[in-house]
Image 1 (cartoon, one colour):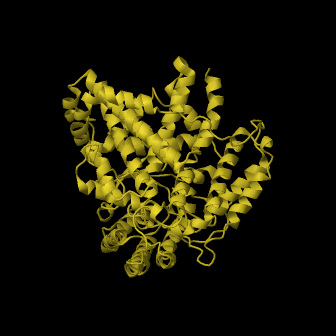
Image 2 (tube, rainbow, N blue to C red):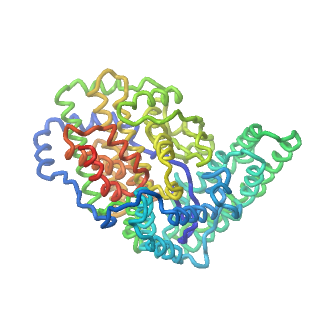
Image 3 (cartoon, one colour):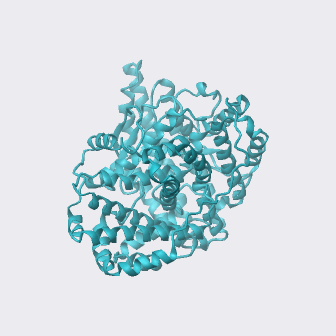
Length: 625
């Protein structure tokens, strides 16, 4: 996930791939029993509705370029430019730099500041970096670039032109979403900060000492937003404040995450004397107590003082230019030539599609609803689950070499505020260090199988490792659109239900379609609140149509949409994008369609915008024929 620190090309690149919080996930049985049983008798009418409304597939995507001519070898000048751009972007903050590379010099990065980054408060609307990059990119003759480089060029141009078009909307930019905000992610980023040599430890301590300055700068930007009425609603501010206070209570404790994980990592560094270790431990404790905790406290104080300044409420569309900003969120994460209205209709069509599938399964075997009670993956051990997934995906996905990974758990202090699970992308020169975090509070043992399919095989970890093996341009690692990355993980998470060892394929398909429907309901609500102005009551009325009569669920959903607009769309519309690509491929290839080969096409392309995926699909289909 890439988040701008300001509107210039300075990134705070947060390398945590997360799973969505789904309030209704544990209530899927309620969904089926309260809605599906009633709907089966209406199946004939429902089929007529679907037939009349249709599920059109918009294959007329705009072309990225008129030419398909490519060079047989890489253009050295283009490689130098995008590698220098990669170095410039990573040099803006030390967390991003270290998260991507262990040895910066090997990537042409020789000069960098040890900082968490800053908002440019003097020139928040400066878009000159975008125009400079776009101008340089357009100076390259596309026909002199290799096929791989042309994809990089297309992706960069789409990303930068989109950012430039909406660069005037910087006032909407905040890093303080309740669940995915930097105040939650920063302790996890520090926990995953690798120590390979003394330099890493020294830089880590210096970064800790920058936390107070970082949050003071962030508070100043939030004050600027508040002066213009854009500060978050009090309900959301209270949630952020509560999570910060929860962290403050444990951060300085001996068994707290900031102390215990540091001490554990020190023990693995070669060449440290006992005195070195003692000195570093003391420096860490000092930095946490004198900079990290005061930094969080200053953020709490600032947010408390800004409460009540919000002039608008509800979804983005209730703010000046808010609807346009929501359009930007979808276009930047998905890169798909669709209007929000078209996305909304697409979600509707898939809700109908999944519902029809469930109804058809229930009509064929009415006992399946009773069997739904007994559905289980019969596995709860994380390592065992990942081992099983790796084995079961071989028929549907290309193989990759063995991957080293560690299963970790979110600290108690952050459980109530973080996502159900997270995957940390490894350094480019340390690809064998992969970490998957599980939130014991947000993920029950019975849900671990699809959760780890999302984070591990064949989700984030698998896709990351496959992409790395294709030797892409470095810049593509930090551009990776969220719609592709999270959409892929959601797409394979739904597929993972088919791997359940229930002995009943129809039951597996029922559960998969049920979960996919729940995801679509979330995307529909996200669009409804942030683009069409749905209220909390509107959300309740919508989900109650599908058997959810719990107003607390509607409340939690509503504020999740308000806090992090477009977040659920990223996962769900991305998933539907892959479904649309698959449908087109199946339609044109008929009996020549091979699911494993299709997945290989998606993986070979790597994280790109959906327009690029669609524009290159015809060439792949031609080869398959």
